[in-house]
Length: 236
Ligand SMILES: NC(=O)c1ccc[n+]([C@@H]2O[C@H](COP(=O)([O-])OP(=O)(O)OC[C@H]3O[C@@H](n4cnc5c(N)ncnc54)[C@H](OP(=O)(O)O)[C@@H]3O)[C@@H](O)[C@H]2O)c1
Picture (tube, rainbow, N blue to C red):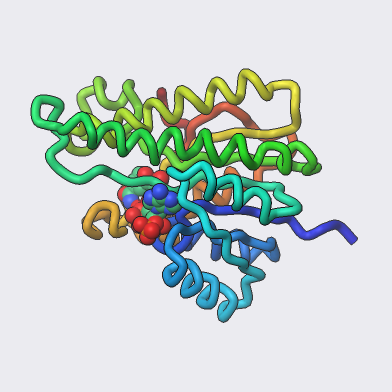
């Protein structure tokens, strides 16, 4: 019998992350619910278990190296890491008005958080037969889209550039880990109604989770180092 696939989803207590955990759990995978708040994490784990998911809680604040290290130490196996946790930093985000500390905080969570978690989990992923890393990015991080004349979200000096930065960093992982089996891809969920945008998004969290689930379940000869949404490749 083949071993059960083990995944960790960061920021899985709500929103798209919760639905990614639910979707991967529905495949029969064992799913770690990475979340920083004990109550919110346990509530999510309970809800997933009630729906038949083999879920377990992983205390995890992606801005805290000690928390990230403890999360890695808690796991004895990991096949798939979904870096989903992120913040917007709130308003104002016009570059002429933004508080530089807001930019720092957003980058700390959305970029450095992904580096912390990825590096801590890498020894586990290297031992997996089918390792995958998914980073939840956003089309608002696409410089091609930002300069292409279309509508790509509000003016944002912290959140959108943090996703551009994230994409750029993940490409460096792809370069460094190119001789391993680890497939690394970025996903955009579309505009999804969650706490992140005051529920103004047009898609459901379940719809938003679909791209992450697709990238988490890519075959061994699937793409790596690419950026996708449900419609196909997103330009950098
Ligand atoms: N919603 C959209 O339209 C949209 C569009 C494009 C991309 N995305 C991306 O999709 C992903 C999920 O977004 P969402 O809409 O589901 O957002 P959300 O509902 O606000 O959920 C964000 C999750 O990240 C967690 N988180 C934030 N900071 C954290 C930290 N320091 N450590 C651990 N967890 C932390 C939150 O935990 P708490 O509950 O503890 O705060 C929450 O679980 C994000 O990467 C986002 O950038 C979303």
